[in-house]
Image 1: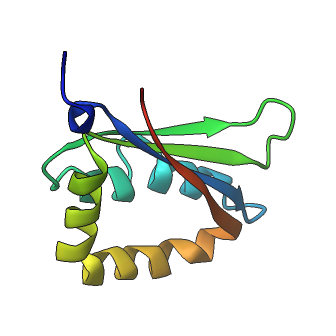
Image 2 (image 1 turned 45 degrees about the horizontal axis):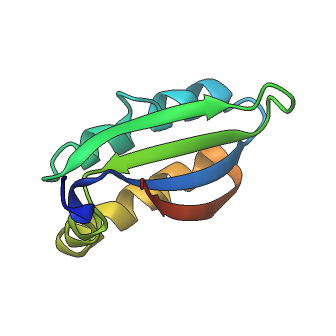
Length: 106
């Protein structure tokens, strides 16, 4: 049996893009967007998934998948300045954003 730490770690965010910025938002937060490209530098990064709510098309969820919480946290500590710069740049595309939680696959 694999160690608990080897199971993927998931961070879920909820976003509401600004009206008229949906396309740019989808590009920035999609599987090949600025966030995924940034995270790909990190050891233990698996993928970023962008999802649009079928009942509320103004609501999106992102799933950032990592091999472990430790891998994600180490990446954030080592790259905090670039993380903050990308976050500031992307805030112009959103009305709201909030972290819904961090999850470990059992």
